[in-house]
Image 1 (cartoon, one colour):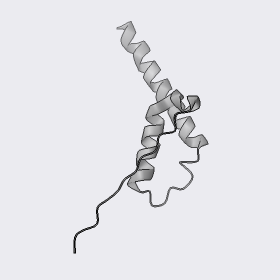
Image 2 (cartoon, one colour; image 1 turned 30 degrees about the vertical axis):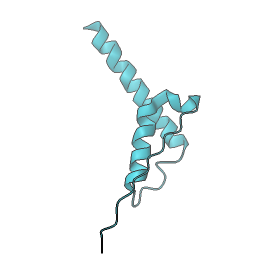
Image 3 (cartoon, helix red, strand yellow; image 1 turned 45 degrees about the vertical axis):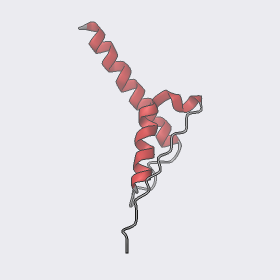
Image 4 (cartoon, one colour; image 1 turned 60 degrees about the horizontal axis):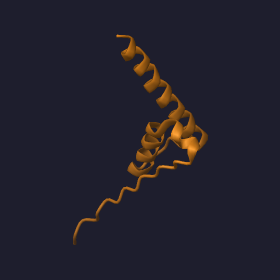
Length: 69
């Protein structure tokens, strides 16, 4: 039971630090129309957590195919 509590705290701390990294990069400033690429980049940055300060700079590219004519 103790391991689950410690593991949960580590996960929460990891995600909080990822949120701080995303905030530092200014991802939360423009809350208008967010594309899938912007949203994906924010999510990956938060999940990467403390790795952001070690040089990890995740970016997501969403290419939506155009319909054929």
